[in-house]
Length: 378
Image (cartoon, rainbow, N blue to C red; front, side, top):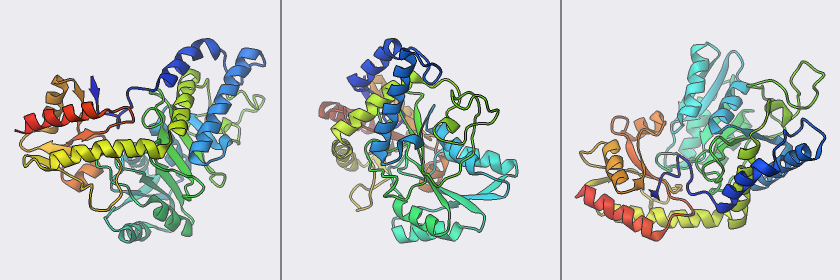
């Protein structure tokens, strides 16, 4: 199998992640925070260390690192936790359904409204588009770190700064980019970071992070046992307990912790450099083919993440993806759960074929992929 669908979930995982998950069934077999005996304390210590590693990667406070089942859960918690009757949100025109659908549901319930700001090639225009959408009742901006379809990277630091000028919370959807793009919570003026654990952080599927700053008062999506303040019928008011009801995914967190440590050791800039080298080669090779449509220009000076979408003329994206699958190549065709982005690029009917490499993608695999696309295109 030749894997180019790391935008959906990363594969392969580092050996350290696989080993951490396997060993966790023996080493972390007790419920953390639910007992004072040695094995329960050992599980709790592992989770604490995982929080510290995540805090180090994103320059956040460890107690504000919340483990979730995934980025979708994190975004739902952030959006619904900030929503009050009459609230208004502003999102970009590149957002994933993990942002759009919660807001649509809240809108249909009469609880909030939202506006969509256009991302343009000019940062000042983009920031002005967001500022123009702000209202007196705007509570939060939600913006992606990188488009999961086209690799476009909005100027999130500048958007966050503009939001803060107006007393508005900034939520970063880092599902695509966490692990290889720089994310610095305190430096970037980010109030909430939501990200998947199973993509650029190399953790198992079913893991995610919700990281909040100290100045955010966030409501809960779930309530229940936390192993703390058990005499009270109310949910604890302090993180991380406030947002982590029920038995945690100990084995998933063990794997995610190993994945984050892998990123810290290899370093994000090295991962990004390798993935950019792969994606630039693919872009150069495909750009010479008249029958291939490329949707982003990797040499126009506008920052992009290593995500490439293309189509072969007169072929549905799903057909191209299926033909590549016959050769053992894994890519994704379709709408990638991001209808706003496809409407923006005029691909809402055709979808796109998406290529997303990883640190483990080899030059031989890349060359084979390019040769297969050339044969299909010709």
